[in-house]
Amino acid sequence: MIKHNPIKILNVNASDISGGAARAAYRIHRSLVEYGIEHGLKSEMRVINKFSEDFSVIGGPPVGQSWIWQRLQPRLSRYSKKGFFTTNKSLHSTAWPSTGLGSELKNKWNKSEFDLLHLNWLGDCTISIEEIGKLEMPIVWTLLDQWLFCGAEHYVSPPIDGQSETNDKRFQLAYDSLTRFSNERGPDINRNTWLRKFRSWQRPIHIVSPSNWLADCARKSSLTRDWPITVIPFPLDLEIWSPVDSMQARDLFGLPKDKKIVLFGAIKGTIDSRKGADLLYAAIHYLSQDISDKSLENIHLVVFGQDQPLDPPKVDFPISFMGHLSDDISLRILYAASDVMVVPSRQEGFGQTASEAQACGTPVVAFRSGGLIDVVDHMVTGALANPFDSKSLAKEIKWVLEDSERLTKLGLSARKRAQKLWDPRKIAMLYSDLFKEIISKSLT
Image 1 (cartoon, helix red, strand yellow):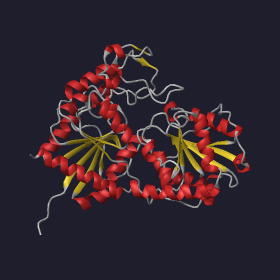
Image 2 (image 1 turned 30 degrees about the vertical axis):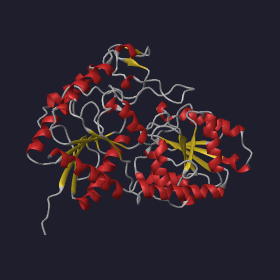
Image 3 (image 1 turned 45 degrees about the vertical axis):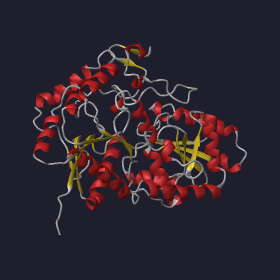
Image 4 (image 1 turned 135 degrees about the vertical axis):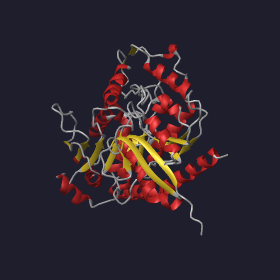
């Protein structure tokens, strides 16, 4: 029997497990490590900031980068945004100047250390736009936000109150100078960054999107509208993310057993306006005014991702702040302790907290918007409210909670759907098929 050498994949990300995007990229990598071998793949991950103890992850600055440049490059990157002001609170990355990672990757490629490069979330200090444009190996790029097909912003401006979608269409209009919003001042770093991408990225790169919404955005972009796109969701370790006894889970967190637990959480908690905490608080207020079922009088709101603020929000039900949960087991137990997870995001490329909660058997309520449309099956694994209507959100939360038998059924369906869609073995197979197709095309 002839044994073929495995196809070697090098995944590149700014870090491995710090932040939502890093966790998604790392989960893809781990699915390839654990199940890719079945499909003839071998996966390694290259990051600048390594936080895990995973031997398959290579951390540290680019090979050959001097200690002077390690200090100077981030400062120059920050300087490139000097004088820029915007009301869009999304992170902005100019990915300038070069870091040296491009040369490292070229050397690895020339030495046949990998067969395909898989880019993920890069930021300012991983690799520059110009370095990416000079890479000649087969490349796949998984979207973890909108930066790839936008300017410097990682998400366009979110919808304003009363609108169901954003009016920020600059990424569709090639960042024409006439389309700049009045809420920006200083150098137009979004236009400048887009122009650098347009000039540098002459070769189309195959995009992977975790959701149909994010894929549609890329197809509308003046930069990537002609690039090939495949939709593959983020994987989840379904052994880690699985149901546990709800009452035992509440004991561990000291949560009341006689109340309906409504859970909300994000890495930045209520600080990030994109995550929609204000919309949830408004929904809770509407819910308190529209209670006809006595079982709903005992709602208890739980927030993770931040400590209790000095001036806690004034809501009509008790609220507990659980702080930052840095390990998967604690978060899994908190999901299991909850009756419903609410993800009221204004923008969400996928919605990992929604998928995690459902894998743990907890129904999810969200807005019918963005990647969450793919994650939540309306009236099967939770409910989707009209974007971005807090009254509609309150109505759907009530619908999920008011019928105990239905609540149980929703939780069971949520777990089954997680097993069907986000099994890492299946995700590894989908990536494997795509990688092999791209490598095959590169050889012809």
